[in-house]
Length: 232
Image (cartoon, rainbow, N blue to C red):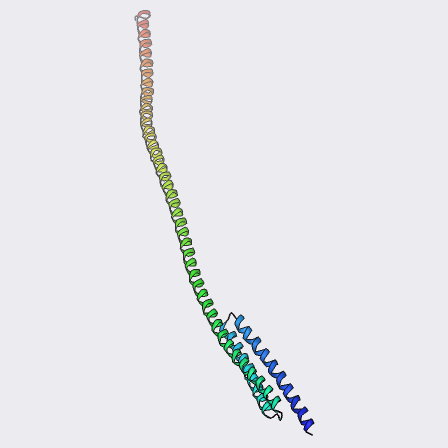
């Protein structure tokens, strides 16, 4: 029965040692993940929660092994197991210290990354403001050029309008002069028409007078001939 008890105790010790080794490796793996974690902060918090759970279970298994060691009947076995317990406790303390260092390094890396992102954001804003300023400068230059082009176009239109007005004024003056000339020529024609009409009437009067003079001449000749041919 004592042999069976020793065998059962050895099995329990063996299982406990296997669990200690397993949870120790899992805890160290989580700590390594924390060393390699670059953020964000909630990811670090999740890893810390997992590490604390692993370390809690590891501490419980070490305590279980210490209790089993103290239950050993053989003093030699008890001392060997208690030495192993002490080693496991030292490894647990080392793992906890490494966990704190890993957390500190990770938090510093996260803070540094956030500051870099902030500086990048500020640099981006500066570049954006510079780019916007350059765009506004180019836009203002284009607007100024367009206004100058419109001003030149308006000046050309005004000049063309002035030339057109001068042409119209000149044409109007020419038309006025032509109209006056036509009026003058019309007056001359009217006077000429009156003179022609007067000359025509004068010619008719002259013809009538000539006819009457000829008739009187022939009447006188006939009268003289009658007196001479027929005296009585």
